[in-house]
Image (cartoon, rainbow, N blue to C red; front, side, top):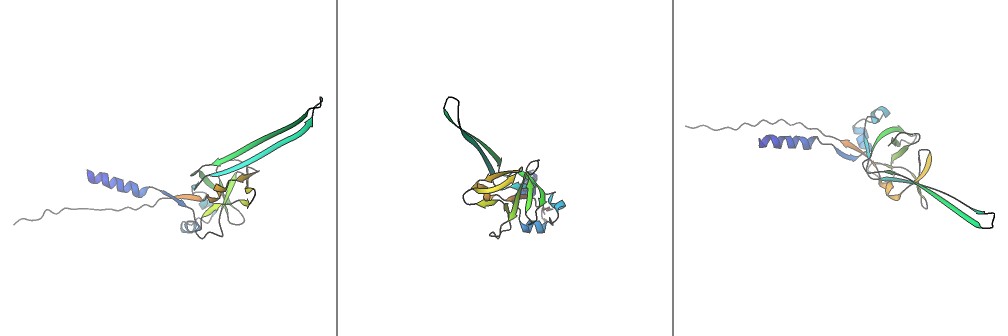
Length: 177
């Protein structure tokens, strides 16, 4: 009985999928060169991506009784994509970067690409980085700015390695004279 429990535990641990960074090597190994093949893969984010958009309105005016009025309004929009959020392949762009979608809607895609400075082949979050503003990203046909922590986000995939092993044991009792 203990043997069956042990065997089932071994089988369960061997069949669990692990998430690891999606790389050019994985893309080549699993022959994911076509959009149709990529659409069958479930992707995840390695870390949180936070997009922020601030719209400020204001003005100065004078009332009929001579009072000066200053008005300001500020609207902050944040899109938070938590760690390990599922996403799907949408398309390749002209540079070979991968566009992924987290939700439905026009222009709601985020780009991931291989960095020239990294030799590991991982697909990292791509944005137009500016020193004083942050990373400019178009999402949902509006301009957002990604936080600096978002720069480390890369795509992950689940990889399940199956290995079946059959074992047959036989205990020999021996012989007596």
